[in-house]
Structures are given as structure tokens and as C-alpha cells.
Image (cartoon, rainbow over the protein chains, first blue to last red):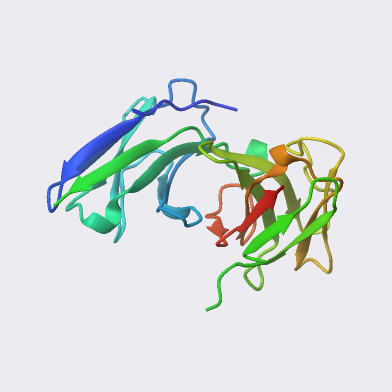
Length: 111
Length: 114
């Protein structure tokens, strides 16, 4: 399974944008880039995913590098409720869709 | 609509006892996954069911762990002869078809083995 690398932790101020990076230099052509987050004492929840093009949804944006070896999750205006562990995961049709979670990035949002 | 539900929410058992954890996936979802999260650890894949195909059991840590999915819906994860290292939050997720589809997670069952 292709591996991802994320910073262990990041801090942000409330109402400011947050850019969460992820490196995945061994990504294969069929791997999708998924982001999930886990709020304290809850199960993970889906944030966004993409393959090659940048993606936007109501929660966040995903910027994917042209060579697909890295990506960035963008929260446009961080709120206190966005404090969570953010996981960047590669998942392709070859691995049944099982998610291989790394340590993720713990995001702290300061008021 | 209803999300993924799991029961019980908390389970305390004694070492050596068997436990059963239940997962009710979202209606119509053909793919079902079990994961576990130990204290201070990341999430670890355990087993995957997709329709009538043979399950992917590659993540089960020992032969004390088994899981069934009856009628393509409800799933039960069974841990026999529980050990203290089995203490963790056990999470279930479902997706509409598996593969690259979004997974929806339940709230988890917190298992404590004394």
C-alpha cells in the first residue's frame, strides 16, 4: 500500500485559512487521495477526495500537485469545531478500498 | 437517513471471555469494514466484506478474531478468549460499493478487557 507523510501537528487561528499538506511520492495511477478527519471521541468522517483535478465541496478544498506526489487540504476559515486529526489516505481499486490510516495531522484551532 | 450504528457502545469484559460486537451498516451499502483504534494509536484495518465475495481478512491480528456478515447486512465481530491488548475502540464503516467509495463510520464500541 502506498504511504503518505503528514506533519504530526499544526496550529491555526480561528477564522483563518488552514493548509494541511500530504506527501505521497509512491502514489500509483489508480490511487485516489482521500481525506478523513476524526473529531475527539468520534469515528472518522469523510472530508473530500480526488484523483487528479482540484476538488471543492462544502467542507474543504483539495489541491493536488500536477505530478500527484503531494496534495493539500484547505480549510478556508477554520472554526473551533475543525479541531481534529486529519488523515490523508490513498485508496485504489486494487486494495478493496480498505483505508490504511497513518498518524495524521492533529489540528489545533485557537480562538 | 440513518447512519452506521454499533452496539454496544461500551463493553467491559474479563480476560478470557468471548465478546460479540455488532454493526448495522447504512441500508443498501454492500461494503462493510471493521477497524480498531487502540489508545494513542492510529486506526487499524481488520476485515472487509463486499457483497457475496469472500471477505478480506488480512487485517485480523489473530485467529481469536472472526467476523460474519449475515444476509449482506448486519455484521458481528467476535473476539474469543479476550486479552488485555484487545482493549480498543472497534469501528465499523460501510460504503455503497467499496473500492474508492466514501466510507461512513459508526460511533464505535469501546472494549475494555480487565
